Image (cartoon, rainbow, N blue to C red; front, side, top):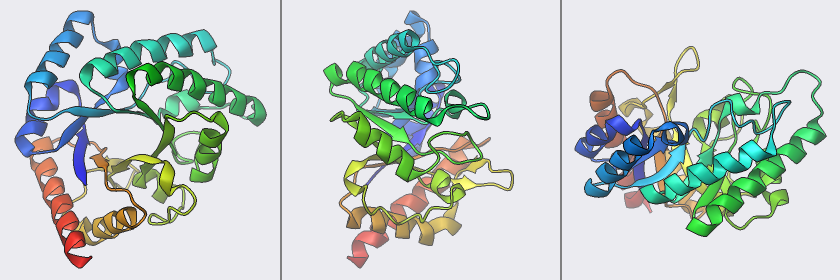
Length: 264
């Protein structure tokens, strides 16, 4: 398994120092950079020791994925801009969580929301296809937004969209808060394109897992590999001490991966 971290562009040197296998930048940050700043970021990645394989945080509140502010033209334009920049960075997978873009007011027509999301997925997958990139829709949790908060729902949307470059981000933080079994991938194992991991604080904040999470992480890795997934796992969390906590989390993940290999 390759282990990465979701970071800002400015934190690339720290991620390299820690020894992560790759980084995962924010799509919202990448699309907002000036042309000069973006080219500088591309240069740093290309000259660095680790690649940028994926993007998280596809967008903030706009363009809306569903809801009253859904605008097909804005969805298309945003997807084209972000996919072009992602390709220049060498990105392989673009993850779509973006809870602010999935907010729905009470009583909003769920059938309409489905049609909007399907069109969003079609346009985004279409923009990514010429670059050979994959689009991975992420299940969120009911505390984050009102739409796409179960694996069953997200999988249904992906299947209905019917695009070959669409799949799932499996985020174990969201699965836990949605009450789903972390190690149960039955029915969607072949759709997994990427994974996210983090701890969960008392106020639902995402944290860097410490060594105490070793047994749980070993079980997750074992379950993933038993269904044929052995690709990428990113730590998606907040920390005030990335060098210290990132180092401990990466040590724990490497140890869990080695111990799992030894058990097979």
